[in-house]
Image 1 (tube, rainbow, N blue to C red):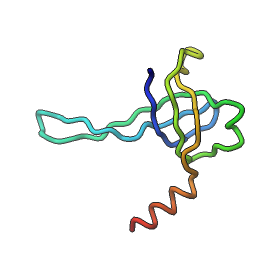
Image 2: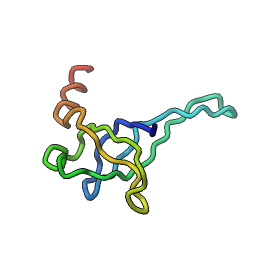
Image 3: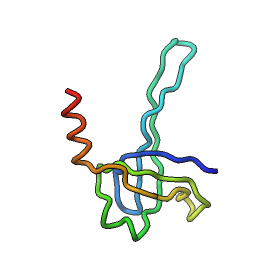
Image 4: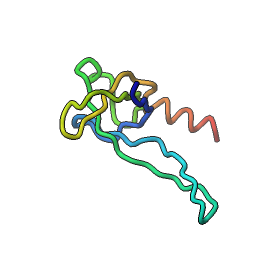
Length: 91
């Protein structure tokens, strides 16, 4: 079983994602720090019309598809406009 992530789309060439920020505890300073990383994933033809920049999608780890692509987009969780509406209701 591979890793499953929920990420924001930041580029649609083959698709490149930013991981959600994850906390990492630093013992020396007794604080958490935010970290992030980019993940390159393949966008299947069936999802090309659905996914836009800024959308939240789910990606899963799979066998290596190329030199840098080891993940594939599986489904769209919510669109960019829904993200904006959720942030406005929080305020």
